Structure formats: structure tokens, C-alpha cells
Image (cartoon, rainbow, N blue to C red):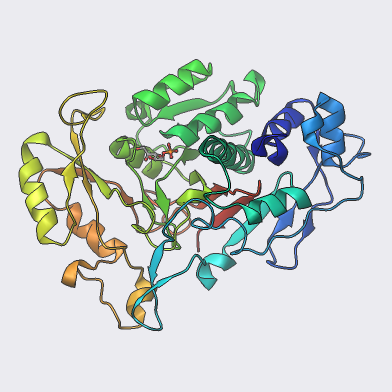
Length: 415
Ligand SMILES: O=C(CO)[C@H](O)[C@H](O)COP(=O)(O)O
């Protein structure tokens, strides 16, 4: 039997693009969301629908059969492939505005939904049924891991397609496993497209990625005074309804924040596991905080005082005995908190989110953490986004999520 990723068509999409297949011009608006688009891949002459074209182009039986007139089913957002449906044994917890108690749900808020559209690079009824019937027990671990990789790659290619314009010359490249696919997508554009571009890394890993892809590398401190990056791409550990992020799972958060805030547009790329109504619901390891090693004990004391549950210096094992040391010679403390509220949660008057009983809004906690002596930078990306601030925004203008059904959901910032 074909593997799920091959049914989802990841490689075919990538190969289709390099083989000259293009997206169908007849993308059509869906009935579910006004901005939702469903797209198909076709030959240049437009004669064949996606899967037929791919099977012919690559002789891959796994690309499946499709009638030329087949159109993709339109998934109902919030039902298909929500985080928690597939892989999280304990669904994310979100504070219910109505009852004031903790209620389980996976839905985006209406305002987040209104800012979300779904793109189906390649999608069949069969894929859709598979995604819907999938549960954590139904898919072997190896297949789950491949599905996640597929999702990351789909999101990366779509984000690069939408946000890397040919005239851009300065591009930020973040860190982590998803960014590998961002660099892959950029390199796939070819030397002619990227020759005039310079790429600015967020640490040792992305430096290597840029060099290995044959792209031009430049340190962020060489960005001329007053200049900005045209765009920066980076991953995230968790993304909430308002596009606040937790970052730093790979211990690169300090340089990541410098690069993100140096960009006119910061674009986040992730897989479906990262989409979360409130920060701290699915990412349970805590908020990464980069600290001066000598200050770590005092920072830990303060974190406990303000309600963090068991904050810890991140260990370097198995690779290194003792604490992890960042690219900047610092340590990382991971500080778990009760899921972080948004301003709209406070409007109900149920929770103030000012730290009482350890319950914080994202902004209030971030403002407090960054002022603790010895804290170099925090892994909360918050505040205004690139549409609201002329420069220096930490939040992305858009977050791309590769979904388990082979679609890409794009959540855009409010202006
Ligand atoms: O913030 C980061 C590293 O400091 C990464 O962007 C974040 O951890 C996501 O990583 P991945 O793409 O591997 O899931």
C-alpha cells in the first residue's frame, strides 16, 4: 500500500513544480470561508487534472488515479486535522469565556477563523477521508513522523511561494527542522532567482543550511544601519489565536528575535501540531528563556514566585553534560505556565491575567519576564505584528500550517 505522505502528494508537488507543472488557474473560492481557495496542479496545456498529470509525469502508481473533472472536497475548518484530533492524547485546554471553567476544544476563535484560509495544493476525497479517520492509534509512529514532515514541507513551499518576491534582496532564515524545507524551497527556485539575494541566519544551524544550499550568507550585524530585511521565515513551537508565538525549542530564540524584528515581514512556518488556541496548551515544556548562566538561580527563583510550574535549566544531554549553551554562550530556562490568556479573555472579566494565581496574559507575562535581571531574551514573540508596526514587530504577518490532510492553513495578522 502507498504510504500516507505519498498519497498526500508531497514529493509530487515539489517535483511537479520543478517539472513545469503549474497550479491550475481556475482556483475557486470555497463556500466555507470567503478567502479559502482550492487549487489543483495541471500540465502547462491545462489538459489534465493534478493526480493524472503527476502519475503520467513520474510514472508513480502512488500518485493515484483521478478523473480530469474531479474537484477536491472542501473540508470543514475545525473538523479536519485539528491538533489534538490526530496526535495529542490530551486535547488542548482552553479557558472557556462562558463558563469560566477549563473546557476542551480545538476550535479557532471566530476572529482567528476570519483570518484563516485553507489552500489545497493537492487533495483528493480519499486523502480527506484518511485524514478524518486518522487517530493516534490508527497510524504507526513512523507514518505519523512522515506525516509531520510532509506538513512542514507543504507549509514551507507555500510560504516561500507567497512571500519571497523576485525583487527581494535581503532574507532572514530562522532555525529548526521546518526551516530546512524553507531553504529547500528557496534553493529549488534556482540560482538565477536567488543570485541577487543575501540570506541572514539566526544561528549556527541556519548558517549551515544557507551555505549548504549555495545561497549567499551574511551576518545580521552587517545589515546596514537603517536597513531592513525584506522578509524573514522561521518556525515556532506554538502559535495562538492572535499569532503570538512560543519559540526557542531549538535554543536559538535570541538571534531569531533579532532577525524577525529586523524584517519588514516576518512569516511563520509550521505543521498542524503548532496551531493552538492559547500558548501553553500543547507546548508543555515551558517558555524558553535565554539567561546569563550566573543569573540562572535568581531567575529560577523569580519564575517560581510568579507562578511558573517547575522551571528548569535545559540540560544538554544526551549531546552535552551540564546545561545547554546557546550560540551566544547563554543558558536556556524552560518555564511552564498555565496557558496564557489573550486580551479577549480578560474582557469577560473572568480572569484578569495580571499574574494573580499564576494566570497571565501573553503580554503581561512577557513584559514581566524581559525585565528580570539576567534575562537576555524570552521565547515569547508578542506585541504588534508587521502590519501594525513600521518596524520591530515580533509577531508574524502570517503563519503557514501544513495540515494532516495535505492542505495548508494560513492565518494572517489583523491590521
Ligand atoms: O524557535 C525555534 C528554535 O529556537 C524553532 O523555530 C522552533 O523550535 C520550531 O522548530 P521546528 O521547526 O523544529 O519544530
